Image (cartoon, rainbow, N blue to C red; front, side):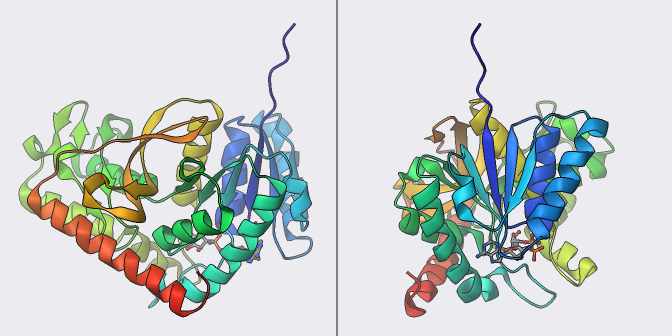
Length: 316
Ligand code: APR
C-alpha cells in the first residue's frame, strides 16, 4: 500500500491573519500547521485551541505553536503574515521600515530551516515585501509569491454578486497591479457565469465597484479602527496554499516576479499566475487597454518607490 504524503504548512505570525490562515488550512484538510510567532504562548495557545476544534469541525490536521523557527523544518509551504497591520489614516507604505526589518529576519530563518518551501508573503506593503523576501531568501522566483490579487479579486467578486443579487460562486474576475489604491481591476475580464458584466451592469455602477475594490482594504480598516482585514486575506492565502499543495494549477492573480511581462522588469506585481507544486508555474499576459496599461505602470512606479525606500533605509 502506498502511503500518502502528509503536508506541512508553516504560518509565520500568529496574529489575526496568521491564525485565520491556520484555521482555513486545517478546515480545508491541507495538512498539519505550525504557527510561529515571537510572542511567547500566543502561537502555542492558538494552536492548541485550533487542534481541539478538530474533532468538532471534522479535520484531522494537527496545529502546533512555537517561538522557534527550527520547528518549521520540512515545511512544504510557508505563509508569512508577521508584521504590523494598518491603522486608520495609514497607507500600506507607512509600514515599510518596520515590516521590512521583520521580513528580512524571518526570511533568513526560512532559508535556513525550510529551504525547499514555496513561500507566500502576505505582510504589507505586499508588493515591496515580496520583492524583499525574494532577495533575502535567495530562492528561485517561482517559489516566492505575494498574496494580494486573490483578495482584491474576491472583494470585486463579492461586490459584483451583491450588485446583481447572484451567487458569488458565479462571478469571476481579474485584478492586476500592486496591492494598493493604484491596483487595476479589469471589468472587461469580469463575468457572471460567462456573461461579461459590461452587459449586466451600467458603466457608472461598474466604476463604483472598481473604486470600492481599490479601497476595499481601507474600508475595513476604517470600520475596525484597531487593525486591518483578516478573514478574506487569510482565505485568499489558504486558497493559494491549496493550489500549491494539491498541484491544482489554479489560475489566480498573485504577485510574481516580472521579467518583461506587461513591459515590466525586476518587480513583483499582481498578474494572472498558474499555481502548482512548483509555485508560480506560468504567468499569463492578457491583452489590456491602453488606459489599464498606463494604470499598471503607475502602479509599478508606486512599488518601485517602496523598493527605493527600503534601499534608503538600508534594509535592501
Ligand atoms: N516573527 C514572527 N512573528 C512576528 C514577528 C517576527 N519577527 N514580528 C511580529 N510578529 C507577529 C506579531 O507578534 C503578531 O502576532 O506578527 C503578528 C501580526 O499579527 P497582527 O498584529 O494581528 O496583524 P495581522 O492583522 O495578522 O496582519 C499581519 O498581514 O495583511 C497583512 O497588513 C497586514 O502586514 C500585516 C500582516
